[in-house]
Image (cartoon, rainbow, N blue to C red):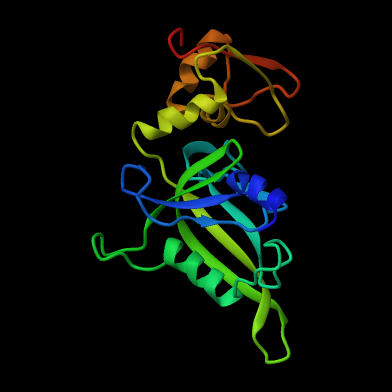
Amino acid sequence: MDTQSAIKLPFNLKIIQTDEKGIPKLAVPFIAMFNPEQLAIHEDVSWCKVVPKGKISADAKYVNIKPRTFTIELTIDGTGVNTNGVKIPVTVQVALFRAVTTNLLGDIHRPPYLMVQYGTFISTCVLDSSDVTYTMFDMFGLPIRAKISAKFTERIVDGLSDVLGMLSSPDLTHRVQVKEGDILPLLTYKTYNNQNYYLQVARVNKLKNFRKLKAGSTLIFPPLSKT
């Protein structure tokens, strides 16, 4: 591997096996040869939208926030373009990805618990699905380039989620500008990594109706110790 690639490697996206509590295992991680061009994060809020008989419509009632999902696309290359001419077979790299994310583990009789880390994005999660698309072949029909599209579901691990939540500084006062469609429980979750404080936040901001936030207004999210 060339010097420039070796310097960048510690900063590449990593997929690491963990135990049930989110503690990394002493196992070989999967390190992306090329960082993804995009990271798509999906958040799903559940609402009860039952309309009573005799009415045309009704205000949707908040139910809960489902675990976040996120999708990444990784490029796998076997031409040696990023490894100083050393050709690592695509099939070997795909096998390592599967060994880290999909293969059943004998001690827990299930696929592994995972942690995905890229920059300040850290998520304890499990793999939902993955698609491998081979995009280039050599003269013998062997794959020399591929793309992996992988979807993960986030896990909330007691204790560890509080540590990871420090990246959003929950012990500092935050001022958040409301955007169209924002709801208080979701904004509270994004700030504290815990949606259960939304009633306290509503009181701090003297909101008469926290279900209808005014776009363009600014909400104060105080430190947890003061909330």
